[in-house]
Length: 449
Image 1 (cartoon, rainbow, N blue to C red):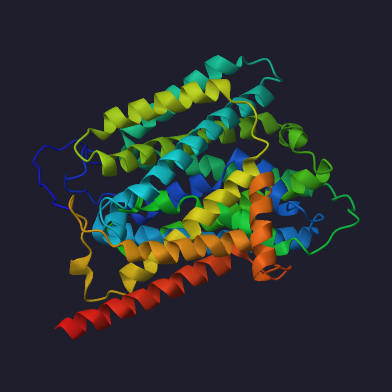
Image 2 (spheres, rainbow, N blue to C red; image 1 turned 90 degrees about the vertical axis):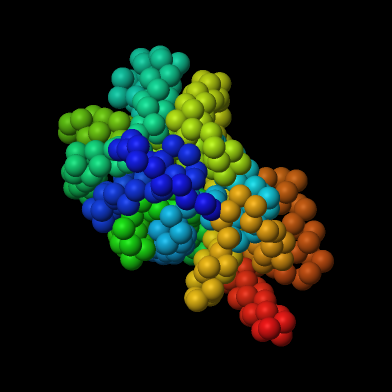
């Protein structure tokens, strides 16, 4: 990717893809950013899919906590590795796939990321609306809240680096205090006894927690490209996100157990503690950075397709689209399936990216990020293999899709048990296949030499 130096200082992220990248984010900035992304109102309700994995009995509380921590740490490690690539190249996430697949083929993950980021952005706006409804006891009108949240998130995406500095200085401390307060208040009451639990859904629970974390893989480099070192960007992601998401999901598990596993009552649990509305309001306001991150990263993904279009124009258009869609969407009953689909696409993709990049020590000058980077179609093979492995082990709960992969499982004699983790097996298979291709390319190159 040809970098154009410019004397015009905007004080923020570059406006077009070919402008030199400022390295202005400190370790503290990045840690605070990832910590804020790790805390979400979605995490409180999403903990249900760890506690009660689809098709399995409820996990014991120790199993749910262990699945949360294991899935979060593994998923965050993938995010940190992808972010390290962005720090080294200085390119946003989707532009890095030019080096992996070539420019034209990089449009495949780019389009997938645009779809998932818009989906997440819409969902986050509806979650903010739900939080405001809980604060106002159902009296807040839906449309004005969605529009106000959409305008705020879009404005934040116009000045992303300034927003990250603000998050570190003001928001992160308030969020940590709120989480600590709710932890103390919820643990003051003994948890009710739950019968009929089983560890059979442990690895599906791990996959769910991992899928939430790994959904940030195709966003990580959009922010880590502004870090000063790869070590700082990776360490910040591991520390900030792992601690925050684990803490958030643990609170969600405790709250769900106290309300009998009913996600519709979980916000009432937080609102029911003394002065709970004050700290809950902090978390509702903080939710805007989730939607901001998705809006900004969608704009950066589109820049891989349209590198000379001003990112502010793209962010404004994406924010408007997410807001309009959020005004008409109310049903998210298939959210767990959405998470599994994200995981099945981006877990193996992360493995292919990271292994191919870091296995080429001394050859990174061949990592071509230019607009005319040549195609590397063979690198689609390990990605496809990882996707297939994921579906064989965990095809989700969408009826026709699950039945299709059920027939494939029967034909191949593959019947996953409690031990099979779709995410881990998918990552390992895709990574090993990529390593084999890298070795073969080296042998061919030496033979020609």
